[in-house]
Image (tube, rainbow, N blue to C red; front, side):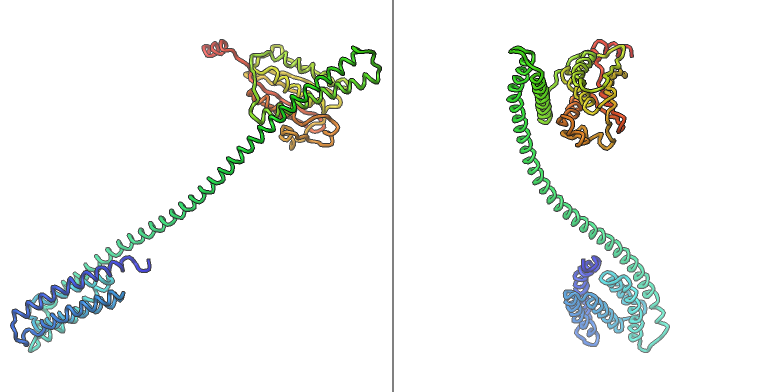
Length: 461
């Protein structure tokens, strides 16, 4: 607001009080002039009141309309004080009530002007009371002046009361005005925040649509890639199986004698074929994992048979390496609820990775039951892995040392597939490794507890 709220209320009060005071003044003046009769010597001051009161009110009202509030108030109050003094000088007698009429404008000044103006009005009213009373005495007698003390004192008390009331009222009004401004400011801030939220919501809605479109496109591309890899894998498997089987049959001499050079070539064909089939299987598994089409067929299984089959498959990879393949088995083997083929695949991937990066020394498969879990450790004495690469090796197509990786055949999918297979069974796969000393992969699986045994344990507890 440009003006204090209390000033606006004072202006509104002025437009009400001015005519409210002027009209009774006009009526009183007319009645008094009429009662006193037509003699101008006795009633002329009342005719002045009849003319001056509405004139003052009109002029003050016009000034207030022009936003000259202080001037309007001063003119209206001062003019009426002079009119009362005029009547007092003509009509006052000891004990008269006329001096008390100053109280009206003492109260009015506090209502339509500043609170302190009530004391100014009382001060001028006191002086004018003495002047008016003095003019009315002929001859002047000072003893009658003391009779003005009661109305002057009463008017002072009224001015004090008016000041306190006006001050309290203005304080309350300004407090309300301040609260009103704060509420408006808060409302404006809320509107601004609401507009920003609407704008942000629109942007989020747009981004959500874009993300939804991108997601659908990504799903479509993923499905296309999965179907493509699946089709390619199936299309390549058939001729590859034929190539591998025919090479094996020819190597065994089913169609004639094979010399050493031919046997060497046929062995290379067979190994390359099996490797290519392994790569195709890894690619197909990863495609199924990414598409969410990967399925498990779990059943209670003896962990010993899975470990032995994985070790037998790994032994074929050690023909040209000086590596000791070791076992550290428990006396009692736990039963696990797993997909037998997939867990064996995970173990073969982990053991194959150990063979790939171990030139000499040992690779140990250790099984340790641990309460409700069983830990399967694959421990090697290979090149080891630096700590900063412990997470990277479980990412697709990531191999830590590219120079070393080039000398070793692999797609970089063995460890990611193994980790996913183990986690799908509710287990974990953790790596501990020291560069130059070797690595330990710890596979943890939950031990299977039959429903009968579970019920018995609950009853025992």
